[in-house]
Image 1 (cartoon, rainbow, N blue to C red):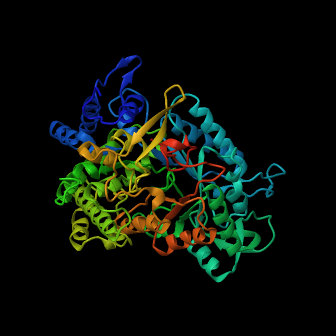
Image 2: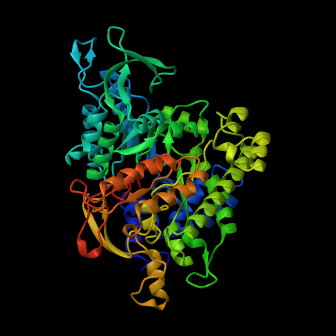
Image 3: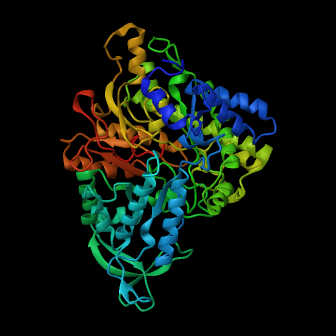
Length: 604
């Protein structure tokens, strides 16, 4: 291979196709090291001692130790008019034809510049409701989602960037049943991931087998029963008309059956998301980025990067194998500055996005390669030891990140929306060590949020096919397809990173003793790993719970209740099915259709 940093052909392909800097026919990055230098140089320019920080940024990028989000790697230091943020949540959609198409335009501009988008469609009146101003009836949010889907397909036709969109709807919106069923038709909303915004009140109603009102903000000319509700797009609770009542348990059953049949819609526990939001005091969240790891207010953005744990394992496959937590912590400190600088050097598709991002200075530092790191250590994914290690490493990253952000606040000032008293009263912030909270009180903090776990599909392939995010190893070998610049797909036979290292160490075709693949894990073990690290993640976690095709529906249904009970902010499952196929397939099985958190749907 012509670049010593690449040990897997697919890795070099990913770099060449997606992240290698070109200006027309001119290749600017001769090697991956040139790409790292380009990124480091561009982001260090936001600091006074640019030369020193360029060297330190390069130091964590080298050997794929730190993996910035794909938009950073592709866009930093180029002349291209692109954003360095992977994804955005867009503004509230005003319930009018002008408002709908203004929102569509904003989404198109954002996607054209490289950002995925998330929308809450709960602000749109339900199908059949009166539109008094024009004397007609509304067609409902799902009908307008189809327009977004067509827009995304059109943007996709202009280049090799995948379209990524999240669409959410409240569990008490009158069209929730139509929304739940929307993707059971394999031709509909194919560029969307969709999730139901599930409230604590709804979960209580499910438990009590109570009736559940489906409602929408009332027009003064509407009759019927009225309840006061908080609603997106409104600063205060508003009167809402009840359109009908359903049994909460029957509605929950529809969500579960749809997931069992076609893997969507996912579930977002929206009250928990807002209760644990560090900026609970100045924003209300009702949507996430396309893969769900960053709940965001209107016009918020994802600024993501992941620490590649495989590069911090010392003496792998031996009795002395260990994870160098000090080096992980030191990398996290530098990575926080790198991601904070992204905010200062990036372009933004819309002024409203720039204002929101600069007001909160959110970043999302996470991890990748967890499953492969466990294999290198000889620890079986899903074991008690693996859960403890994952929790320890995420705690290390979280605390190092908060300390680094406090240091940046001392140097550059806290984020503009910082309110010391209210911030320190936040439910997540109260769980931090006393010393960190005392320092926040004294110096402030540079970034409102600091941790998130992304799926890292594409950038994990770039790093020689390490396991993505906190996911288990999919399989030891499999076939993976990647999108080419001409819109066609190339197929690669790939070997898992840790398995390849095990074999390179003289173990022929054998598998490491601790090896287990995603389908070999009990679904509850997937959830347990997510739950183990959520306490140290101030945003959220992108995690797909793999479920065998023959898994009993009654057991499947319990997974979502378990996710709620274990304190998670959302749940996404995947069971191979006729609508979406499988996420990936083993070499002998042929190729797969894409699913929400796979490389085919991740926003790079």
